[in-house]
Image (cartoon, rainbow, N blue to C red; front, top):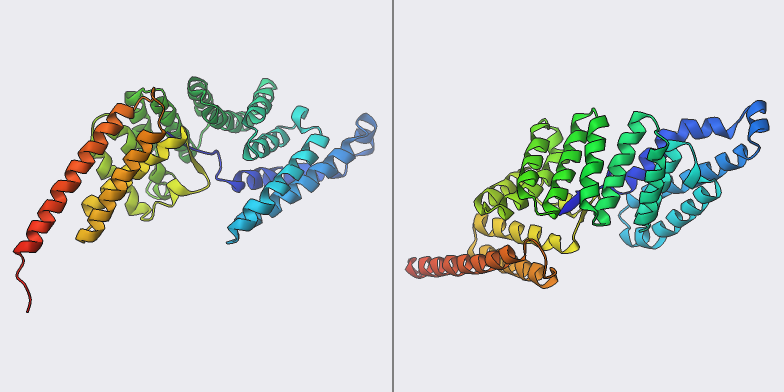
Length: 337
């Protein structure tokens, strides 16, 4: 099952850094009285400001077309930002924006356990509601990466109780639906996806609806409704023809082999809609290969492994029948001289 990060990719770091910029600037020039109470305030503010500069540079790099430079330099800047945040006492800071940014940096660097612990510590401080909503959402994503799906569902419940914005609620509901699917509760998953889509307006569909439609397609297929799944993929592609959103940096798969299920359904849908026989044949081959990839990579106790094997056989039969019809049609066509 797939997840969306609270904010896509580096944008999470950038948005948090920008949101806290006035606060950091204010701390950069503490009063005489604050200096007396906290002599280290100037140093911490300078460290945080320096780290935020690195995060802004990281975001600009992520927006560039030089992807190899992102992979080479980006982690260096993130590690340096993490060091600066730690020197500034971010792990125990009572500033919720600092804790959120620090947790985000940790997650981006692969320290999901550390990010989760940081967010749990922040929530124990009971920060204002907007920060709690963001923290619960980020924590839910960490729980997803750690395969703590029951905890993930509860974290989304907490975030939903605090989140007033429609589009954000749709994202939370869709992610929670994916957690239900990870636990094998396909009924709750389908209901969750439908509830997420019901909250979205037409403009929001481009940003949030595409991935939700894909998630619903997979859930429908796993509930036994292949035709409904194919139809929802077709609808998703009216908003995103090249499937960029489910292949972007803000989207990841838990478990990792689940990407093959999405790919298999995507190729299957493409095969059915292809106008040229060669394109249809190629798409069917890719669909079968994706099913084989899922079967090869899934553990023996995977909820959906038996269905994946059945879908592979069904896809192979459909491919053979379609190719037979195409050959028959080609043979019956009048030959040009």
